[in-house]
Length: 462
Image 1: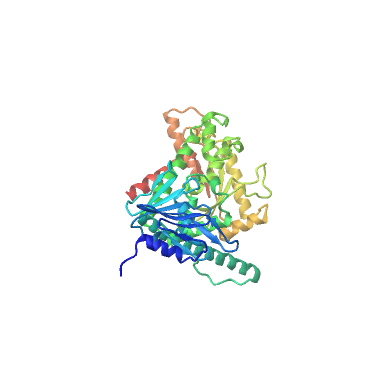
Image 2: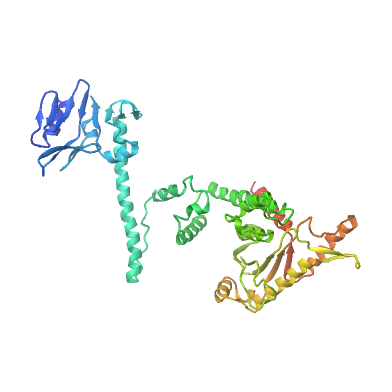
């Protein structure tokens, strides 16, 4: 049996629609509203009409470009019958979106040759190879299937939440996602216009963030991520992130005065907080720095609580700067002064160094806070609960105090010769070691310990 020509197939195709009023001539197929198909020497040109049976009229389809396809293009690849609505290009609405075909384009040409899509804007034409059109149609069909499937899964998830809300029954837990579903959300969140925490606030609520934290931790523990990715996390958190934190700390350490209105001070304040107007004093800057980065530094804390207020504390300040709970459930009271405060002073009568008045006050203050912890003199019951829930009962009776004060070049305001310099190191060490359950560290030491940690870990990794 001899195969039919493209023209014969087209005529048979439109005859099968059984629309009234169509005429079939040698060079065209027409309807009362205009020419539907025109056969020229090398191409078949089709305009998209449909017969409106309720009105008994022919109407042109909105947003449909004229279709031009050359000899050799398969009819089945470029046209499908939509019962009740005539004929159309397969998945044309999706294809228009993929190729950004708007109403300014008047023609879609389909050819048997070529591998690329050609846009001829001046001619208002877009040319598509048949093989590409077929592939796009199949990909579009997959988009439709995936979209439908995702919608059903989302509905199932939301309905299950409503079941719990209205009936109190917990539905059976199932993984209502398919491979590739995560990519949609991840790519949306990974846009270049999101580079700060506040950029995510419109998209993530507290529950979202907590679930992400839990799930990420679980993926790491279950060894789902590749070794290369985990290695890059080590590089980021141990090397890059911590080095950036140390750099910021040293910028604060380089401030030679407590004036926060200088250009240098404003620069480092902007690195630490999005709310620079809140920083009025140098001590506030250090407190904000440690509030943000204490978990990354030398201290191994699983939780940090700022400004937990106590009852019956002498003086105006009723709270320590931080209470830290370490991974052994031990409890630390952390007091922060500034790097410009002297830690010791020269006692000329005894020819040695003693604690400065600033550090002496800080020691007494920290001991008072430690005593308040032991006696559970919390101002708020909610604070007592969250502290006691994080640590064992016996650890409340053995808190440790940490005072961060001064720096290498601000330990004392006394002028030093070589003899006094040796005496300074010796006496400062003795004074620190004499305190029970209380540790004194300088800002320089905190940053140096963190820096040594980075270097040692990185050397071991290499």
